[in-house]
Image: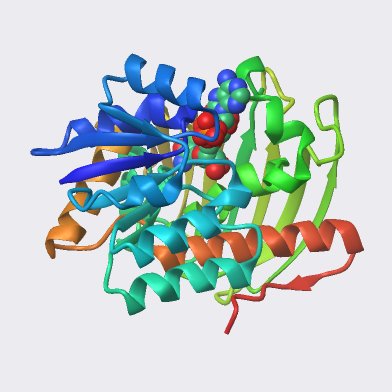
Length: 332
Ligand code: NDP
């Protein structure tokens, strides 16, 4: 499969180029950048044959089967529509778009053009999360009563830019991290949050966008979810907990891009360490995406997953702004 990268981004150079190249027969043909020089340097540094500044010219290459979109968030919508119209399969970064209706339009366009469309929610590919989901779905903790998500990180200097100061590019911790937590909770519980309350604010990094948020979500089953996302917490560490009628799962250092962390199950038998696979999260995501393109299986997170995580994030932001309970609008 031959790929074109839309966006000369850090997530591409840090994780996804390697994951694409780990797939059998995969090649990266080109990269698009808004800046000719940055694009050329990115192409050279990553051994990519061509760089473009014009998307139409890049997409005109009929040998390209699939695109990976990792530009800033406000560009995903128009770039995805152009790629889909050119008949390319699309792996798009989260959040899919700035508005729910744009995300729905992208997913519908892909369906109408019969191309594979996926959202790069990496966490559901982690061995740790696959093990947690198995524990929950096999009934090891009984009926889930609640979950707590600890996703307050310390944004490294090199990632600060648009994330902390540019609302028009989709900055803020809610589009950046709450979307991942929404996807992870949906993945584990196989149900969609109904409504949310939230408080958001700035605690040292955000310039015009929130850098911290706490929210509480209710689930159709009655489970309550508490989440905390932040860019400013140097020592908090990440984690996720699920508490059920028959046991509790405590997972630490698992809300991350790396295959690390630890999981403990506590129930009437005492405490058990849960082992899990430590494969590369992005390699697995790309493997499933390529399989879906070939007609075997599904991407780990598809377009509907991307719409739903965005819908929850929008509800959290609206709840934080209004101070009211907000029902999640999944767009019908
Ligand atoms: P970057 O800031 O690295 O890249 C975003 C855009 O910024 C690029 O497309 C590029 O524009 C421009 N850019 C990159 N480097 C520079 C630079 N040195 N100076 C000026 N401009 C630059 O963003 P991320 O890689 O962190 O995020 C990109 C997308 O990926 C976002 O949608 C984000 O939400 C998502 N993401 C997903 C992750 C995941 O694990 N699923 C993790 C991290 C991010 P151009 O292309 O025009 O050159």
